Length: 146
Length: 369
Image (cartoon, rainbow over the protein chains, first blue to last red):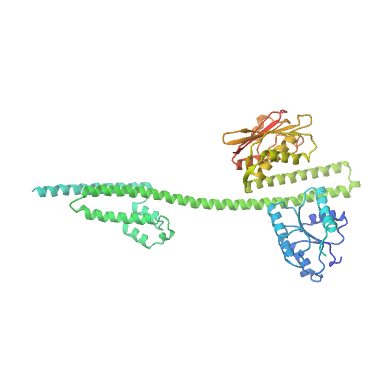
């Protein structure tokens, strides 16, 4: 896969959740250019082309970032803050996709400039529906700045 | 001669005064010893928060008062100093005046008076001291409670997040098993997997309900005037759009309530959805919401004509996880009415229920006017 032409960046530490998310997106053919990173630190390395991703072209930004909140090393809110603070990345739509329904998390995410906040449903059909709907919306319906 | 006699009389008086004073003083000493377990002076020095309160002599106590850092604490600092100095003065006065020619009886009365005041003040100060000790203890307890609350918050957070993840995996992958291996699974296999999924759903609901219960307890309340009639209709409208039952709502004219809008709305959601749930087809599909005027409270009620309950079990109605119907009859986790009770109690109100098997149920709750 060409790491410079990524469409969706999935930041998720839990492999089963990642598999379920990718399965839901695959049903809508949205996984061709998807990269899954396993924690916040790796997400930042990918986005800013440092560490193990230092050979990547920093210009190639994803069209959508799906971000989990609670992750080891660097948590989702910190990743979000770094993305929205940086001129190069602040225009990328970020959707928080998390198990947390805590008001505190929702408020903080929006204060940091998140584009959408989705709480993962426990039930499989609802989960698949939620993930594929948001995938279609952000990848096809939404018009990003050129 | 007359002059001598007068002197003799006065000297007798002085001796009597000295004896009475000494007796009185030893009694007072005993009293202090009994009351505070200390001698008067050491008891005073302990009142001044002195590090060492076992000094029997006036002088050592006095020097400690002068040299210690106790006065930096600024708490009732003047009282023990004042009392100590007063006692020393009294002793000096006693020595001086006892051998003077006049005012013996006057001095005796004054001395008793001062000693009584000292005793009285000593007791008062002891009380003030124990009060401030209690306050300190209370502050510490408060801190402990705040810590415990924070821990509870963290717990609720991790429940909401961490327990959902494995649940989603169980549900998701058993579903994937059905989807991807449909041809290899027979009917019984599918039934078994569906049992797994059904139970995952129940656990998910349980986690959500417990979280809501804990949120009700810690959310800050914003009290405002609430138009109850409008809120009841609004909530019922929302609930009705998601069910397939033909149920009619009858709202009598309701006085406004004073409370937290979000929490009061939660009460109505729980009560009305209960009424909808327990109204089976064939029963009168009417839910009544009304009110009565209490002395300093308004009594609201939600009445249905559904399956009702046996008054024998009324004490279990608001218990956490307590259910009066089986899971097959009506789904539920037994948290709804606990939440109602918790919210009402936070508002300083009361809540109770009345019911009859197959005769409907009425839940009453009060809110202050």
